[in-house]
Length: 352
Ligand code: GDP
Ligand code: MN
Image 1: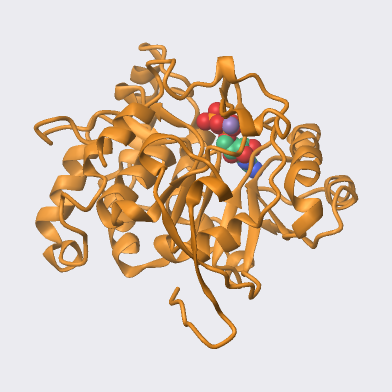
Image 2: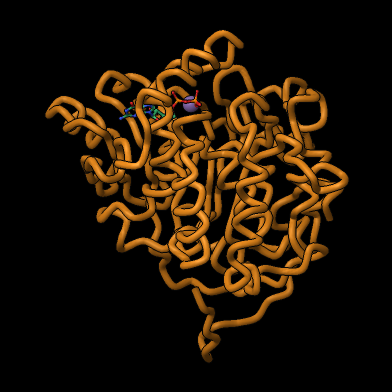
């Protein structure tokens, strides 16, 4: 999305620390355009009817900490039809608009070139290695959908930015500014709170497939930033011969839809999809998004939302700086960031 300056827009130099404090690499002084025009943005969630209690819990916290002040709409997606109860109870939790969509067969199903017998055999093989979701067919459809299709769902057509949410997560800090305007006004494309390390058994051929894509698509690679300007060090081993497993946890994303709708990403996804790795292995949307964004975007397009306290499953991000103590209800002592080796935040920092 282009940013146009006109007379109503003032260029303000903000010392970033006074606005929102972030440690280490994201501690940049930013040029902030005080552009108050509305942003076309929404929450998006893929969710099952059976997770109604979980998404209600998520929404209550999101409304309390952020959205009661900003009223961004919610887009609910499902591979099944949402029940009336689901629609009634979720729409009752917000003053914002709520939309409900079904995902069609093309976005959630086997492409005709996938050998389903082979896919079943590889699921059985993976199950022997105790990999989470090894034997789940629906998990693979979900990861493929989140990797290559959610941003093409017609209900998202009118939006430029999204915040992905999930059932059963916590938001633990008050957010007093509009995160979508922050993204637009600072020309950010990808925001995260938690970085994580992938189980290597789920993505054995992903990196090689990405390298093959680079070899076969110099037309696309021509648009990518130089290695130095990219975030390749966040995802690559030292010799760049393999994937280091680091990724942004995609259950939380505040990002640009334009990034995924770009011809470059669509070609990238299509190439990956045709290799079959979503089904013959168990490629997650997190490594796919993270590797793509790390190669395609200049590293100044990323933002660590340190100020958004967040918990998904057993893992938490909680800011430790004193200015957040009154705004957050989480415990900074259990924040994953630099404490747990499963976090990749220090690898992220080192990439700058
Ligand atoms: P994890 O975070 O990797 O453990 O995976 P989750 O089970 O949380 O799934 C990720 C997201 O996709 C969540 O928002 C789920 O509600 C949703 N999801 C996963 N599988 C399905 C499915 O088969 N149907 C629907 N409608 N949603 C799903
Ligand atoms: Mn989850």
